[in-house]
Image 1 (cartoon, rainbow, N blue to C red):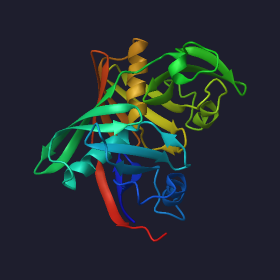
Image 2 (cartoon, rainbow, N blue to C red):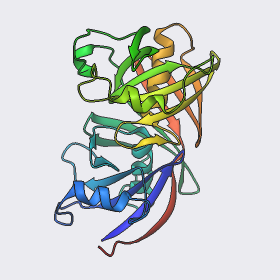
Image 3 (cartoon, one colour):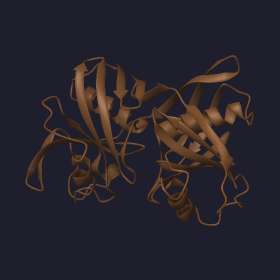
Length: 273
C-alpha cells in the first residue's frame, strides 16, 4: 500500500489513494496503526482520497485515535496540492468533497508547483444544535466552572466544533484543552484553541485537537479563532494567525471564511503491514 506524508503548518498526515474503495479494509484500524509515532509512520491523521460524483475528489479524514473528522483545514490544503502535483487534476480552481460539504479551493501556482492554497471554508455557526451542545442554545463569552477552574468559553462550528479561550493574561495552557474537550456540555467533544491577541490583525493560536491532542497547528481552529474574535469585536476581518508550525491568513468576507496557507510534501513510501 503506497502512501505520501504531507504537512500543513506542522500538522502532518498520511495520504493514501483508495479511489475504487478496494484497497483499505478497515479505515479506523489503519489510521490508528499508520499514525502511531512508534509503530507506524507517525501522523496527526490519515487522509484517504476517493472518487467523488460532485467534486474533483473526496477527502476522508480519520484522526490518529481512529475518530472521524468532517473537515480539516490543514488536510484539505495538503489534499489539494497532492491532486495537482500528482497530475490528477490540471485546474487551479477545484472542488473538494468533505464531510462538511463541498469546498471551493483556489491553487496559487508558480513554476508548476502549488505555493499557496486558498480554501472557502464556508460559514461558521454558533448555534448549540449545530455544536451538539447538551443544554445551551449558544456558548459565547461565558464563564464556566470545570474541574474547579473557571474558563471563559466561546464555541462555534467551523466544519467541526471549536472552543476559544482568550489567553492574554497567560491564565490557560494547552493542557486545559484536554479538560475542556471532554466537558459534558459537548456531546461530541470539542477542539480547543488558546488565543493570544497581539492586535486586531495578528493573533497567536495553540490548539488541542479532539482525537489527536496538542498539534502544531489546526486550520479550522485558526479560522474559528478569527470568527470568534470578530464576533466579540476584538479583531478585523483579515487576520494573520501565527501557530507553532507557521502562519495562516484568514479573511471573513460576506460571512464566508477564507483560509490561505502552505502545504508541503515530506516523504513517500510503501506500508508493509
